[in-house]
Image (cartoon, rainbow, N blue to C red):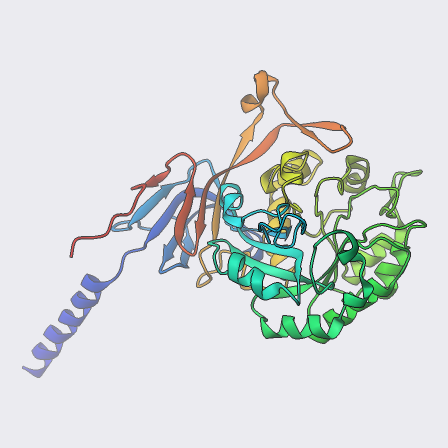
Length: 426
């Protein structure tokens, strides 16, 4: 009798667990998953439950799922991370990127490009970071992180960004330490002058806060030595952005006379200096990037430096920049890695940039279109830089869907079934 009672009780518990088992919220079926952290590159399904990646495997049962996404023929990747953006937008018309008109509201450009995490690159400093947090970080669906400008008043333009007296390493580090989950580093930008003080103060702040530093070398005549910068000023893990720029006021990484990457640049990358694209308006030139990539020198991270100027110029958006690097010879897995897992490591946030089970479900679903979609059936897509140099590419990335924290936030062609999840009847 006891055995029978135990059997009935065990059966009841098992049935109860089955009955109360919660089906997946979203199942992405049949897509080609590229997850560089976990060395996944093949046809897999992805299941999401309670805002987390629940499972990545072949042939996941989608029975009872709230939404099923038909991803056959598409690429499923971690949500894209753009570590160089400008999003402290506001109405102070004389403050450029710091609570001013040159910056952008994040959700307006991120999700349509598969981007789920961005880093604001120095728009705010320690004086105005909390205002930026309140009106942009806290108000955005996109995950917004920040590099604090070494200038206390941020990227206000003009004399403010040239004020060495406002470059306070201690105050910058203290603000970074106050918000360790939001501030991922320190930024130097736009300083004009043959002076190492701004660089040294930024690196000092990075040391005090135990955060990486991103360097935009601004400009000077004569130019500051990037060999000095890479090998004697920066630490392993610090970031050199605009790495393929070619301007008269900045020393380039490629010797324009020989078309070869300078030997100390290879040494710096081996040392651990991170080379970031930071495309921007005039900070990327094919004359630097094409020979560098042909020689095997690839950027560690791909980013946009997006703002009101660059988005309407040659840069456009993250997927356009990623497509350009494919046109120059990087393969798709390498481009995905440089746009997901590598930037997550660069900002010391290893919980991001992958589809690891248990991680927050930030996902991009991308279509790799071929030349038949190009303008006027030319068979190729045209990519150009700010100098007017144009190259042709046979493929271009388009975002079909973006998922942020397990919720579909962008669906280009209605590939989710059902498209809208309605509240269940009580």
